[in-house]
Length: 191
Image 1 (tube, rainbow, N blue to C red):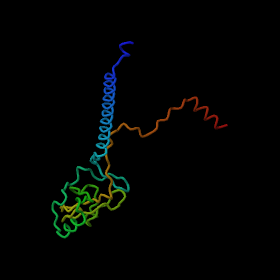
Image 2 (image 1 turned 45 degrees about the horizontal axis):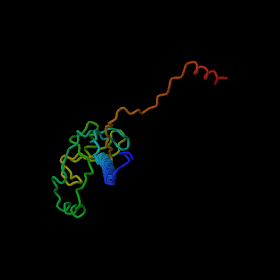
Image 3 (image 1 turned 135 degrees about the vertical axis):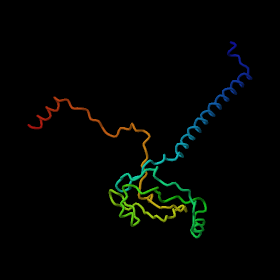
């Protein structure tokens, strides 16, 4: 018998244990890699959308204002109506109320002064109603009082996000026809 063939039962048992340990380590590594991949996917899904740089009319897609022109406000910062606060507490026990409007810091050049005098904000291109203006202020749906209130309803505008990949091909480039082929096809059609 050769030395390699003559293995004791103890050696066989040790080899089997080593193989089992290696398999377990490989399985653990695979599980760990799968968990890392799942975590990466979850992180990508949970990342909030990048802040919108511009806002456009929902009907005609005319760009109206940018995010730099918005007035930031904290929810329930200046809530005045106690009746509304009690009502909100009854209906929204779990969380805060999301804002349903954007507030612009100042009147914009495209805003029609005649309509502003009436307190209405319309799109300069399609004339659809976008919001309202009240110099005395108004209360946001989140509870904050904003003064002056140049309010644009969120449902009337779309947020326009910047594309991360600007190298996306948006058109199809057709090959140039050979002049001889073009002449032959033109002659062939005339016959």
